[in-house]
Amino acid sequence: MTSGDHHTDATIARRVRRLETLLEEKGLITGERLDEAIDAFLAESSSPANGARVVARAWTDDAYRARLLADGTAAVRELGYMEGSFQRLRVVENTASRHNVVVCTLCSCYPLRLLGPSPSWYKSEAYRSRVVREPREVLREFGLELPAGTEITVWDSSAETRYLVLPHRPEGSEGLGEEELAALVTRNALIGTAAV
Amino acid sequence: MTDASPDGFPPGTDRFPPGTRVRTYRHDPPHHTRLPRYARGKRGVVVEPEGPDELADVSAQGRGDAPVEQIYAVRFEARDLWGEGDHHVVLDLWESYLEEDPDDER
Image (cartoon, rainbow over all chains, first blue to last red; front, side, top):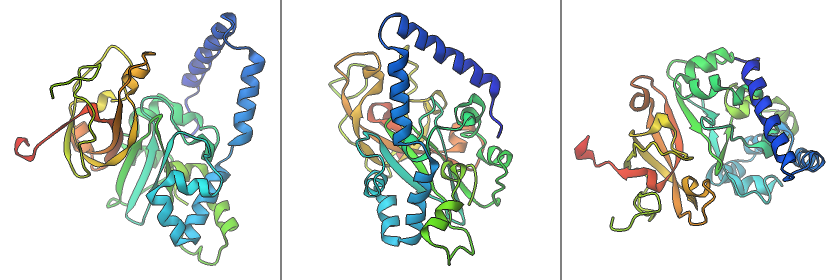
């Protein structure tokens, strides 16, 4: 599953292209306008580095971590993210005994402003249908083997609420500064399909 | 329950505090809904209110009369959803998708 489901992606891409063509034919959008909108969006968001910085701050500042878990939207705005967004952000914390993983079973809701564009597998029907039912097996396929006693929670996101996983800070990282810590955090760790 | 929302659900009144045992409706509407099929007619527990928003079932039809209701994070045991599994699934659900599920009916 890690390489994505190319067949499904091709189908989605065809549907999106068809929709674009119809909207252009009806004069509702122009291709140029669409490209401008996508460029503007990507310039504003675009990178899992944003989410990684949020995590590194939470790992190094207990008061920030508490605010982040209590009200994710307000806490990421302190760092300049998700300003002007109407969505709520809820941050869910992994511990030594608890693991969280995020999915959108109805479509592909995802915290783009903190993680950039989503990976193809996140939108695949295989991931969306399986992770709610057998998360332990799906995580194993991603290379994440969790101890049998680990409590797993799957968060099914929606257009109104997005989720970000606060990974468990790795052993031996005590001496690292915020930037070095942020460099350890991967996109998959922020979705919950990997550990740090 | 004298009034009904435009979809025939009870109106939203922000009535489920954290810890409330709830059951989801079994509805299978011919229009957009945010209650996924796998979670229909299932028992769960309210984690907390997430804040109010327009009911997507109505707003997605392009109608201007969508009621604003509380959305709740509701936690389901995998066993209750799938008959097996030891994990939990948390979903954000509008109030009118939910009814109280008293302990004595369990």
